Amino acid sequence: MDFGPYLLLASLEGAVAAAVLALTAVGLSLVFGVMRVVNVAHGEFFMLGAVTAWWIGDQVGGAPVWGFVTALVVAPLFVGAVAALVDRLVLSRLNYDPEATIVATIGILYILQQTALMSYGPEARPVEAPFSHRIYFPWFGYSTYKFFVVGAAAIVLGGIWLLMTRTRIGLLLRASQMDSEMARAFGVNVGRVYALTFGLGAGLAAMAAVLVAPIQQAHYLMGGDPLLLSFIVVIIGGLGSIPGTVVAAVLIGMSDGIISIFFDPTLAKILATLLVAFVLVFRPQGLFGKRAA
Image (cartoon, rainbow, N blue to C red; front, side):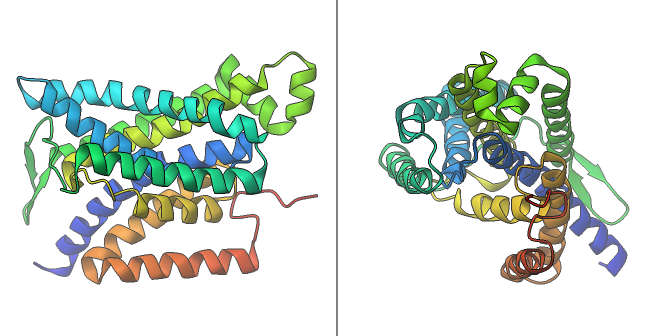
């Protein structure tokens, strides 16, 4: 294959990686932006979404599309409910202390991972795509499901933007983000807002996992890479900045997809880490973050 078609194929793969990464990283950014909690267990909520998608697909009979659609609705709700419960039982009891919540989420990471290992097993298991049509370019054929992943991620991210900017829930989230004590003084139940935020962040990670599971398979150790890349994206985009997170996700996702095809996936991770170091040295607040007063 010539360079041009090869670059087109790499760009398409990069767009899929960017879409999934944007969904996952926006969930992490939302939690940090509103709650100031560094959620080290975010990758395990991603894994839990993929494992749940496999289980639902295995239980629902008929055409693969029914199992996939059910998983796309149920898995984010289930994982979001688990995360909200974790917030109420663990994080709220620590008063959202930054250092204590880091240690707590590390513990939650291992609990979720080992629970998945004991109940799901160590094998990687395939999740069947809802459809398997292909679009044929002059040089190669490409899965229409991957185009669906990009489109679905864009729609969900647009919905999150509308939620944050056009709804009462978004107003409560932004008020709690700006000054939680002042929000309490005006009658906002900040505890519920935090539980909703933690659940929403985990639900977005789970939705990303359901979308990517038919491409990557579900495995109990699959949460590591999404967690690392999400932290890289959030740091580059600016801590708590959702627009910055989306831009950084497109940048990192596209470069990860292209470099992985032309060279090596490890090289893509190394370059992304170097980019984080570069940003921390020359613009520590991130590309879209605001410098602390």
